[in-house]
Length: 449
Image (cartoon, rainbow, N blue to C red; front, top):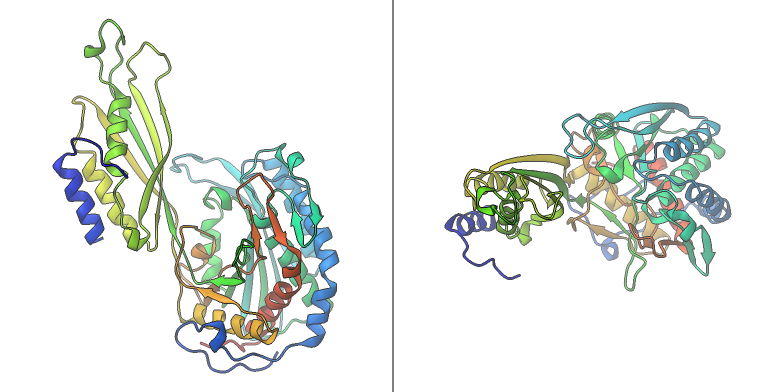
């Protein structure tokens, strides 16, 4: 990327500082994740495998129902309708269901105390050793009315629909895992929990605290984001890491003046904002996954007036929570050096989502998942480095009682796109088997760390 002309010394100093500083018993798990080829296969529960295969048709019906209810993160009516469907299904499976309200904190830079989609929290007591929590989200990034352009349909080995990959497939999988466990009379867990939230796509500002609390209470947390890309060479996987995310808001106040007859009397807030954004675009460290991207900007209201106000919002990502501190410090130091005198700059740095960092328990869960999949004759990759995305597994993993594992959902493609988002139908049965076995084995205390 081309460097802005005339860089000031502080830019080089800050950039350099950031770049430099910144069913059957299993075998005892290893301390680090193993590759699928090195994993010993666990015996297959043939009856459960047959049930999982027979569940494909009903699962697709459930998925059609969920996709048919539009549920954008700010569509409170749609989210209420969808949460009612989810709650009813969980109740019929014998779980105790609570509807929990959600609201963004007042200091959120964009949502500022707004009401959010309610959470569905369901529990069921058992007689086993460990508590297992299943999490997914029912909100999407889409506006109401967009679903008409991509209705649910099945073509070949693909099921299409708006929001189907992110994350209605995950909600449907949880519903059918709970159904399978109930129909088999399986309750060999201390407690089974389900949390489906409606604000994940806006950073889980309302549900994050509860996710963190539940993560400290459950021995195993399985998150049902997509389980791999359906693009060429994509394969099934589980995740042991996701990125931390922060939202930066910059406000510049200058002075208005006539743009034609007296521009020199004004203080152009847009110029100052642009100067600050261009300086900071090179902050970060690719090796750390630390990056900043300015994504929203607003200034002025009249063509012939020097703008007195300008604002911008940036997206910040990092592999670790600590590296966000580096970015915040660099930005606050950078705004001390201004292009235009007599302007003021306010900068807020909101930590939207923490990084998910694995522990020994998480790695043991991942290894067990690989062994179960190997038993089916299928490979399962363990991804232990974040790639820029953030998920709710991170909140559950902040103060974990045990282990957290991400990406128990289906392989798919086209998330956050209104152009042919889909999941793979052949992936349903093995993923349903895997998730159900993980609940059984973790609940019985057969995953050890």
